[in-house]
Image (tube, rainbow, N blue to C red):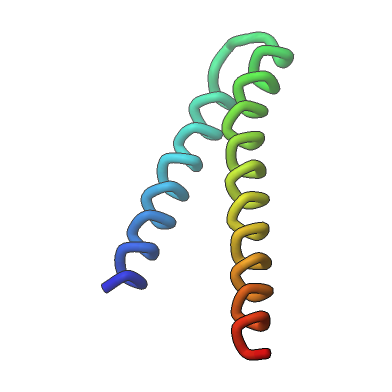
Length: 68
């Protein structure tokens, strides 16, 4: 159940992200504005992945501490 939910979230984010990239690429806005608009979700995604990685790393360390 959790796996199915995660797959749906990832698939939905990929579709929305793809549409966002397409919409920005096809707009007639200046290149600098396009880069700025693309940098915001990219930065949010990087921060989210960094937090997720850190939490998983700490979780493994806590599991090892409980064993010893």
